[in-house]
Length: 314
Image 1 (cartoon, rainbow, N blue to C red):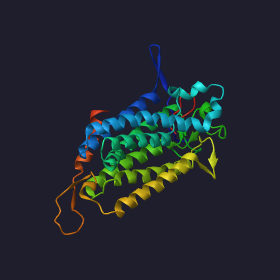
Image 2: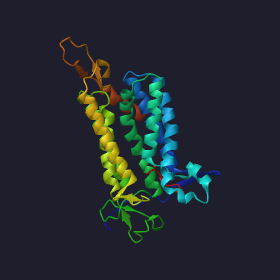
Image 3: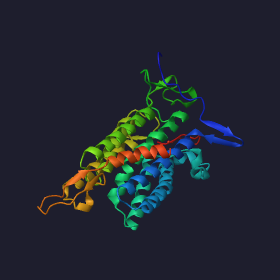
Image 4: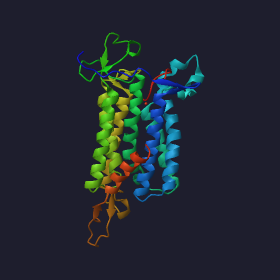
């Protein structure tokens, strides 16, 4: 092997009597990043900051419950002799799509109860989610988990023998799917910010594009992932869920541009100008440069799923 990506030699370090998991630190940074960016974007778009803070808090709490539930459910047999292990989330084991689903329901419920704008909040999250995912995936790197099939490419990821899948005990390097997803998420952030700044987007467009584009990449990555407990018709459950989210995103995008938008329903990435009573749709002028500035400010100012040994996010 002429070139490869070495795996870290550690994933835990000690501070006095405490064992600190790098995965946990990265997960905390990822969650905090998503929270800060969501609140700032929602406020910048004209929403109430307190509404975003409350929705973000409950999305995190309920999202972690959903992520753990989605991870444990297909692996109940692993806990048959230790049911309390189901609740030891600090040992690792969360499922991204489970967390997103439960967290989304919780956040939208809070926004609705507080009379906030659902699509505006969703667009606020559209950049925050891939930012958090890009950070959290590095936890998978430190845990040597959630990689793909063996590869001889120069960016193949070295995996220690004890962490290799049973089907590939002699393979030394594997596809670094964590890296592929991280790079895709960064590209997605850049694309969304560019569109918000240079195009007249209707409200809800950013979240619909995130749903479609992230899930497309996730579906493709699931084809080479080796950690799925079972597959149905050749696809993992996350692969099927990705197709479902792609369909939902396409349906949302169709609905957004099918209906005739009221002035208050125009994308938060644009500023609405007074329209002449001509019977045509209100004119809008892009003003989301502030959105791009906000994401930069967010990073400047502040600023993963495996089984019981502490693996990360699916």
